Length: 121
Image 1 (tube, rainbow, N blue to C red):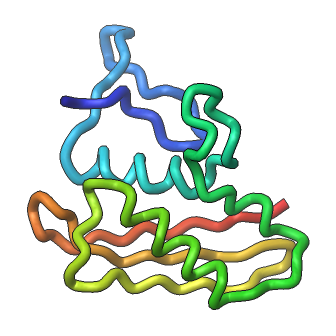
Image 2 (image 1 turned 45 degrees about the vertical axis):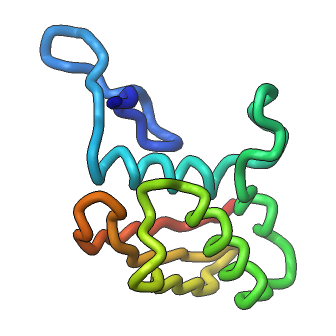
């Protein structure tokens, strides 16, 4: 079942006729992984345990191993992420934040996907 096309931090995507676009397949999975990682636990009142809360890490002493472990555990909660081959997660510090790069296989198609984003103030 498709979702409404919405990349975290952006506006909803409108069609040429003014309706909302839907998204499915690999793009739907990418959007769900990103939303899970950037949502703070407790932000969704009906699912208070949902989310990794990566923005909470900004300004803290960077523990790459702990952050990588958190990302790995959270992305495996999404059905779109295949467990094998093992996802490759890279966390790199930048001024006032981190850059995260995740290379994983889509569970449905086996296609390798890359999700890269920064979390900063």
